[in-house]
Length: 308
Image (cartoon, rainbow, N blue to C red; front, side, top):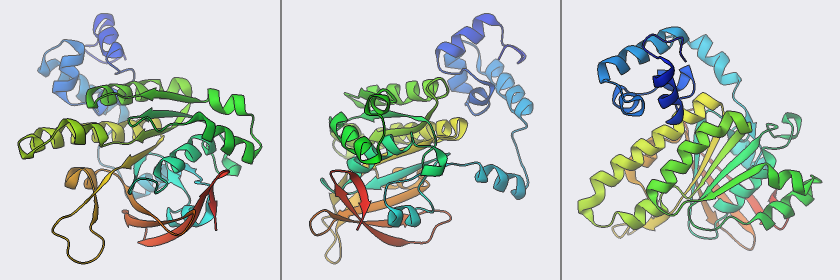
């Protein structure tokens, strides 16, 4: 980092303490953010960012190079082949996957399963990495990790140690924990960040139409930080989202995800999960830049996420 012009030991220390520990992190920062983190002027911050981008050659590139980088993206199996096929092979790194649905639809169960499966070797559908789990609703249960690990024949103690968990108590705490998660991702070899759920605190703290604009701005910035961290660390970000019923819907399913258009535009993959008969769940792919819409049926059992 000190190779960058204008970044001495003192500034480098302040930037590192604020989470800017690599040239990549600086290159994708905004001047106001970097200026505040390093206690420097915006003009200086702009020069530092420009130098970082030149060093990394960030700018226009041909589509074949982008395709090559996309091929380096990993995928984590969900435990269900039908669901994996719907998602193009599993939960993808370098982006955000959102699952929304009502309570008991299976969103959190998938989160637990991914936290176990990411530790599998690549030939078994994992990435040989660890998981970071940010819990906003108090629904994380290590007992489920034990059940799922036993079903896969994994060492339970190792699996539990490879999942780092934190409870977020408000939206600011949630943002702080996610920022810390991105900072520790390389050190922990984390290939998965779970945020369950992304909107519960925002929904509780910002009530009424008068708070809609600041809520959406804060949520938008938060999601873009998650996306940036996913790309820098080549990790998968899995977020769950609550739903609400549209009072103006007279026909069809009135269920709609919380977060509005801000949340709709950031995740690369959006899926709607609903409960069916017994332990069956139906997942519908709502939005993806490269995958067709479709549905998959899977079950949530003691062993985890499985096919019918």
